[in-house]
Length: 293
Image 1 (cartoon, one colour):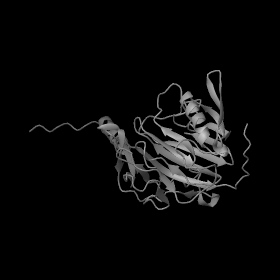
Image 2 (cartoon, helix red, strand yellow):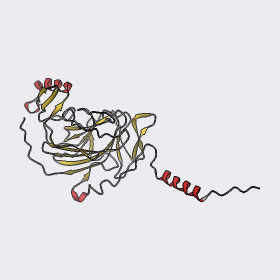
Image 3 (spheres, rainbow, N blue to C red):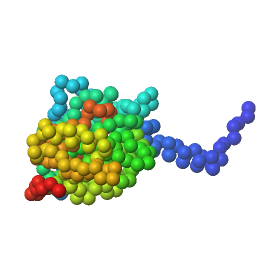
Image 4 (cartoon, rainbow, N blue to C red):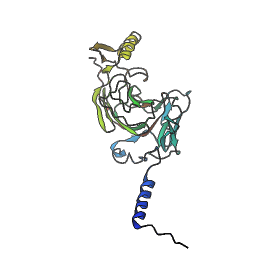
C-alpha cells in the first residue's frame, strides 16, 4: 500500500493564507457594515442624534400614505444579480448600522421626518443601483440629488450632488452602483455646504441663486405668473447659460411654500435606493435674509 506524500510546509502556508483572506472577505456584492459610524465623529455628547433607529420607521411618516409600501429595514443591501437596477435586502435590521431600503422598483412614497429642523449638520450614507434616482430634501424644500452618475465626464443640474436645477458639482465624485457613498450637509440660514465622499462641493452657497438648464429656465419663468411674489424667479440668459435668483421657495418637487424650518425628506418614488447612518446635529438658528440679487 502506497502512503501519500505529506504536503510541504510551503504548501500549507499558502493554503492557510488563502483561507484567511477568503473568510475575511465580505460576501459578493456586499460591503462591511459600519455600525460604529456614530462612535467617532458623531458623538451624542457633541449634539449628534440618529434620525433612524435601525429597527422601524419610528420618527418618519409617508408623504403619500396611499402609495405602495416599498421601504424596509435590513442589515445590508446588494445589487440584484439578475437586475443591477435593483437592490436586494439582507437580514432584518435592528442595529444602529441597519439600512433603510426603498426596495422593489422604488416607486413608493417619499419619507419625511416627523420632527422639523432649521439650521443643522446632516450626515448620511446612500447606495444607488444602476440608473436609479433619489434625493435628500433639506427642510423638505431643497433637494441634494442622489443619482447614479458614475462615469459621467461632466455633471449637470440633475446629477448626483446637484442642488437640483440650481447648482452642480464641478467634479464627478460618484462611486459605481451598489457602493456606499456619503453626504455631509450643513444648512445654516440661506447657506449650503456639501461634502460628498469626503470632498467639498459647495461652501456657504446661497440656495436662492444659481444656474440651471434651458428646460428648467423656461418652465420656471412660465410658472412665475401663478406664484406669489416670494416664490417668483428672476432668471436671465447670458452667453448660453441660465442664471439668477430662484426665489424663496424650494427646488422642484419639494414641499409647498417659502423657506422655513421643515423635515428631512428622502425621495422614495423615483427608484430603488438605500440609506444608513442618518445623523443630525441642530445648530443655532441664524437670521434669514430675503434680499434678491
